[in-house]
View 1 (cartoon, rainbow, N blue to C red):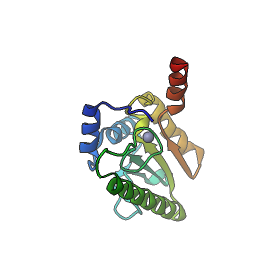
View 2 (view 1 turned 120 degrees about the vertical axis):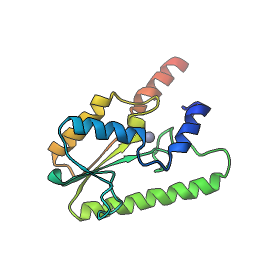
View 3 (view 1 turned 45 degrees about the vertical axis):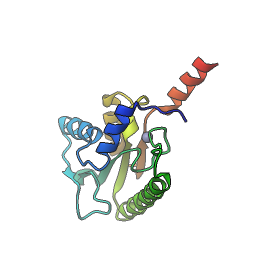
View 4 (view 1 turned 120 degrees about the horizontal axis):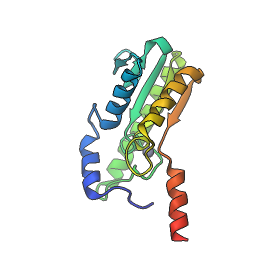
Length: 163
Ligand SMILES: [Zn+2]
């Protein structure tokens, strides 16, 4: 896959990996708050300490960085050095995410995962669209859903320009 981030973007990306108040998370927090939704942050008593918890909707939202949480998208690209280390680290994170989301669902919570690439990078969607996905999820009654960037569109454009 082609590298979608400039070195500068990648450096910023790496520096934010462990950050709690990452930009995508702040976009979601601000947007949903403005829409009148009330939530708690990083609820310690729930599996995986979900980023946002909406008790009224019995729902949680996780805003996942694509690199750290191993999203199958071009923004999860291993660094050139210590690839084995990063690969093992990210697989471990993915397994942990799967365990905690299963535990949340078993406990009767609904879970929406918002991937970083839906709000940052070349495949990002308009913020309003991602926020609308959140409201739709609350109304839908579905157990689990994910919001990601529109990589299909990028791939199609790439094919069109390189044809
Ligand atoms: Zn992604």
